[in-house]
Amino acid sequence: MIDPSVARKNRRTLTLLLGLAGGMFAFGFALVPLYGLLCQLTGTPSVELRTEVGRAPVGGEAISSERYVTVKFDAAVHPELPWAVRPLERKVRVKLGEMREVMFVAENRSSNAAMGQAISSVAPWQATGYFSKLECFCFRQQSLAGGETKEMPLRFVVSPDLPAGMDSITLSYSVLRVAETPVARMESGAAQSMN
Image 1 (cartoon, rainbow, N blue to C red):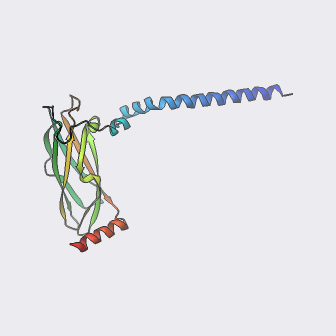
Image 2: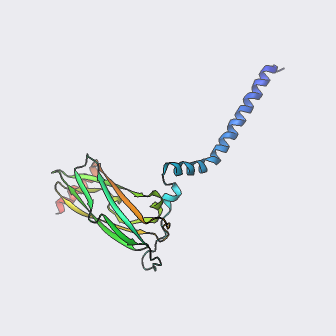
Image 3: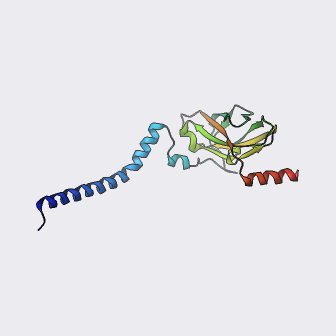
């Protein structure tokens, strides 16, 4: 025969485990709205907004919007990278849906070759899903020889679906030093030997 105190402990343990399993199940369903709330409170774009591609016309599609937006550009270089990076135009006025090209200039201020990677961000973050970079120097690592200056293009489109209250967007770049890998050294050596 089972001792009544042991049976009571077993029931209590079973109830606790069932409650824990039910709580975990409910928490799984609550994660999606909690994540959305966290993103809203911290100002971080949600996965849905980051993966949404602006529905801007591409190629020969007609552009129906007559609305313009000001796009400002900014670049900051990490102190470990001896580069200066700046846009040739600090701001441009862009018709929604039109492709626009802006040039950035990068200058290696040291006598040694260095590799960098630009990381972009869009402000306000709500505009991220409406700003599409078609070509950008930020898509891959850049290498500059000592004293080299290079122009780097940025081609972008701002979607006609941009919400009405947004009249200004800022595209900022943080340029960081990248450690040169053996493969990158071999590629850069091969490129120099071809010149």
